[in-house]
Image 1 (cartoon, chains in turn purple, orange):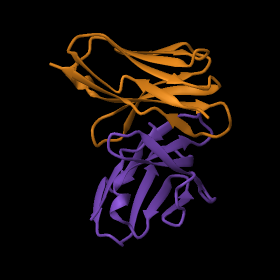
Image 2 (cartoon, rainbow over the protein chains, first blue to last red):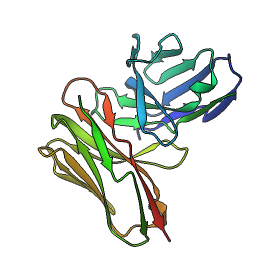
Image 3 (cartoon, chains in turn red, cyan):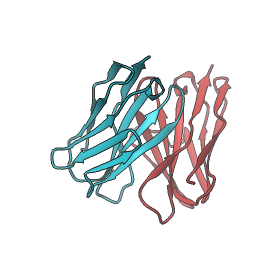
Image 4 (cartoon, rainbow over the protein chains, first blue to last red):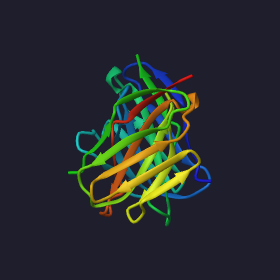
Length: 116
Length: 113
């Protein structure tokens, strides 16, 4: 149980386009989902915390207008990278916390974004 | 502000050896500590989660210990195998209501056949 999926697993796009990444909890409801980005050979950096039905909380330095997060249901959160540029190329990972469960987070397999 | 450090940054050992990975944290007021494994270009696999009230957790050849007062955790891997090669990350969650995890930079482990 507690499986989190991400789609797509990888995406290549042109500079200036927008890219949407989906994070789904497959067998549980997640009131809270987290979005991370990871640069090569570095650890994870929390971008934002997403709560179902409310606005996401962004970490300092993360542009909320550039990284749009929508958590419309208890099983789906989306991250849209708007007007992507090469510096946005990174590995994006989401995690989900079980509603009413422990504090343990379950992680998705990640999405590799490459902006040309 | 909580800071998590992992030493060493990289480790290469022959197959079959027992090894220890270290994780230290500056604020002992933690709720839990978790060890993860990440293969190149992949997501995270949770290995062990230790609650603040616990001293250790075991799963197969893995044993994680927690000394909250000294701000240290170790991940012990017995009889290492080439398939154990990966980056190992530790993360702590504070005692406050924020669910944010604070991450170490990871230890890249290579097990030589």
